[in-house]
Image 1 (cartoon, one colour):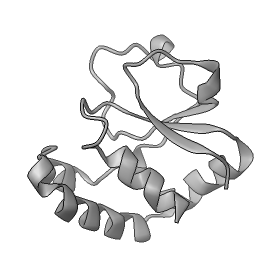
Image 2 (tube, helix red, strand yellow):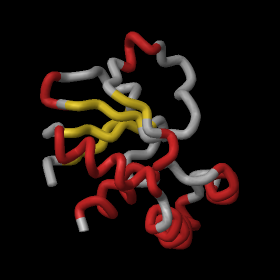
Image 3 (tube, helix red, strand yellow):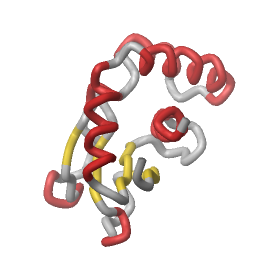
Image 4 (cartoon, rainbow, N blue to C red):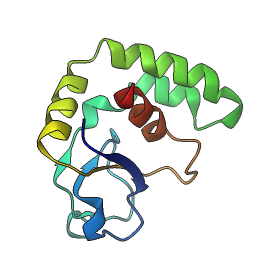
Length: 115
């Protein structure tokens, strides 16, 4: 598998990002499609709406959220699509809109893909 990194979509795009994929279910506020500089938007690899609402980016729920999200990823056909994209393009940067670089689903997704 190619190199996969994560980055906030609010940070400027760089050549080193490679293939840029938004992995949020909702479009990030205040980001134009031009500024996002995306190659793909794979919203189906994001947490389900119910899981995202339950978690609410609460750091105290991070471990439980991660376990539930990994279970969703195990059953997701979108993961196979993402793996195919990663196999074709390297490096790949998974973009997310959360404020905290440690409390976000993209880090869990990256780790899931790397195992």
